[in-house]
Image 1 (tube, rainbow, N blue to C red):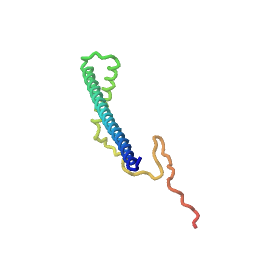
Image 2 (cartoon, helix red, strand yellow; image 1 turned 120 degrees about the vertical axis):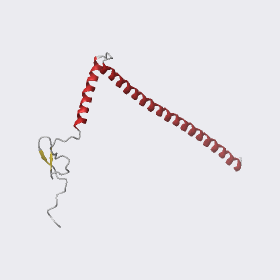
Image 3 (tube, rainbow, N blue to C red; image 1 turned 90 degrees about the horizontal axis):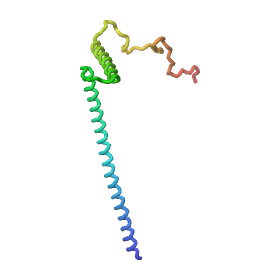
Image 4 (tube, rainbow, N blue to C red; image 1 turned 180 degrees about the vertical axis):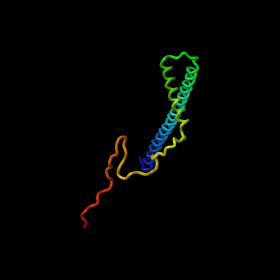
Length: 137
């Protein structure tokens, strides 16, 4: 076999391997796009399910409130808990922004150096500064 034939055979083999690798990369890219599309579809379906469950819960709650739905005890209990939380939210909104006439010391930005308040007592903080050496060179 001549040198020219060997080089030609090496080129054919190299081209064959390169073509196979390109085809494999194309399959991988196609598979990757399919997987990404499936993930996207899954996320969209999960979001739609959650939205529908929320809507179902809201509609069920409205029917329980109107007493047009004879709901089982666990659902009635959940509806009562929801009423309690809703009332607390309304109370929080109605008092928000209304002062009591007392000045608060919170949020003044002033701290006592070296101490911090806990629920029952004041505790001495450990210093984070390094102690100065008493010996000098």
